[in-house]
Image (cartoon, rainbow, N blue to C red; front, side):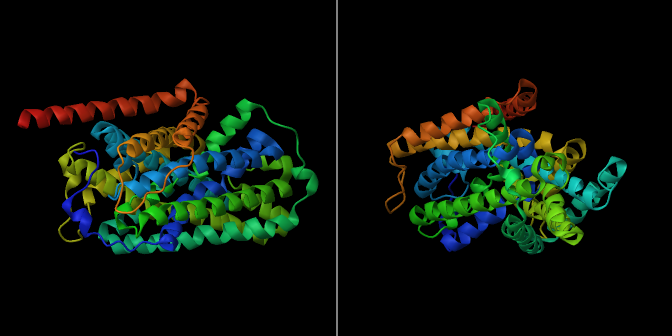
Length: 438
């Protein structure tokens, strides 16, 4: 396994993705179902100052995406963080960043699936609790797994439907909801404590994650030195404005009560501001959006499982491809089973925190990778995008991420520590077998 996972076939990929296509991909992946639930958590942590957490997240994410922009403009192979970190620090760290990405995506998928049952429960009381909740999750995963096992085209078609389902209700609420805001509900309550702001911002980062997944097809991006940074900056700006509008609309309509509507905060705000029909529409939109997150993840993430099995880190059976459908059937089934168990046994908030740990650790590695990539002068044919200020931004981004990670409790980090220990053991076992075989 090399630090930069290139292959002869990489050069055969068609470079057809421009700014518009890459920006659309980032928006589709980044704006997930979690944003329908997070406004309640933000309000619980900071009250009317909740918007400040989004600003903090946006500022931190600007530092992160600037680092992604330079790394992406220097590395031509597909793989995103796996390729960037591997080229900078070597195969072990590349592997570890890939594992962190897979852990994050799996937990995030399970978190959104658990969030779907919360939204469904608000729509139909009782459907998201007890044994009924388990049955609902099993039906959802069996259905979408079956579709993805039939072939990649069927899975991609479901992703397109999900994109429209998640964006339309959010944009409508973010714009129309501002007209129902009560000024007293968003009056500045005073500066929150640093601990409360950091903890709430750490949770809100979940709403911004996704850029690294959208950059996986770097080998298929046209003029990446210009396309990657432009697409990232455009989309992060737009996403931040949308989130601020959604949060302020909900906070302005419900005020302190927003924190009490954890199952469907936006639907509750829509109902209060515009009537029962509007609430039902938002509630249905939230449920559909979170439901349609599953086919997108089932389309993308089993391929990572397949790739790591192909490289010898997971059992070889997971690298088998169905000769009829030409999809990694075993990887899809294994990934689906793991996510189902996590969604059934966890809650949105608990899974979200664990997912955030994996993502933040991975982002630290990517930000720091810019430093050796630049010193080694790793570059494409053209001039790469360069982070302004030399190495200040990568170090500043890493420091900000570590500050957010400092809000994690030992109990919350313990599960992630065990998973990473297992991953490290698998790496060295695999390397030992390779050395023996040679």
